[in-house]
Length: 289
Image (cartoon, rainbow, N blue to C red; front, side, top):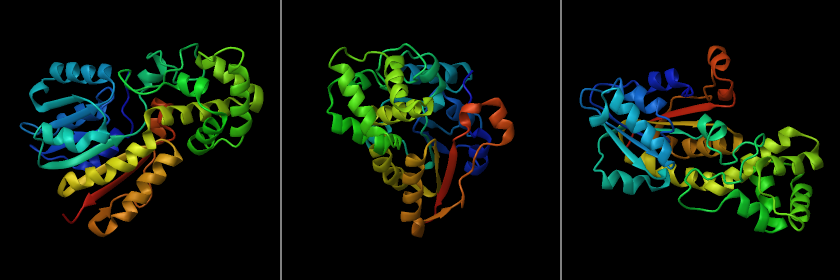
């Protein structure tokens, strides 16, 4: 079952009123989108965006089943194109924009795209299978130096150079095709499964250009908000959170930061959804146009 992270806290801070419009830039399986639609009727709308066509189709089906279809604007695309998506759909008077920057449980458990190091799946790691490079291409064709750079800078892996060298040595003999094959290589060097988690995080970030996209979209999102609109961001690792925190500080003259320290999941939520354990929620309100 899909469990949206920090849903109650987000709803509390958004303080949703009837007929307000919101954007969910990372709709996933629709947890936050549907929760907002439950509160912003009878005429309020949600623009839901997701790179994965499977996810956005699922959100449409759920909204239809809940009677919200006419108030949902569903777009299969990347939030990095937020400005053009908003313009194309004539979506105005925006009271809040939500970013849930983690990958969904479906991607890990059922997508078959190699997001987890524990499975025998092809090294894809793309959120959208329609375009972009795969993790397989990076692992099998990028230079040792470039692989090392990714692992160190996106995974904060201290043994990045040794892992990159081993990857290049192995692929000279046989291509590295599957997630568990790569994990075994990492373990052979580090003797740590946590290192595999860091390596897979790094590759996923590189494949989907996640950090650059976050940096580009936050200023756009802030500009799109109407006065007193709220910007919500949930991050799942320090690199994401650092970007969000830095942006909030940068525009603090035109905004009030509602979360002096990031909000983290409650003990109750952790018991129900252990995967929420690294989530950090930051929210601001736009005070000046």
